Amino acid sequence: MANDGLWGWMMMLGSGVSAGIGNLLIKQSRQGAATGLHSPWLWLALAFFILNVHLLGKALDRLPVSVAAPAISGTNFVVVVLGAALVFGESLSLAQYLGLGSIVLGIVLVGQV
Image (cartoon, rainbow, N blue to C red; front, side, top):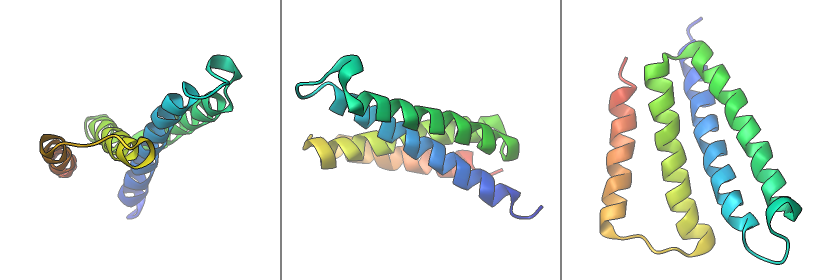
């Protein structure tokens, strides 16, 4: 099917984003009065990690693992770094912005199959 590759990339993107959101929610679960297993943020993070694994499997049905896995990891990294800046007010250096650009370029290059 012609759209298999597109669906694979959509599943890959969803997997990386859900993993990144899960990581940000883990950070959120460590703040406030309810931490650890008592934090609703932790349980929400686990739901996003389950979604990540499901979408990873769907992506691997359509894309080579040598393309999907690095792209998912890179997407996760970009979501975490930008999310940390937006949600938690963490400042980013020029080097970090350049690193993010390099990661995005790497995802594009690895995806050229």
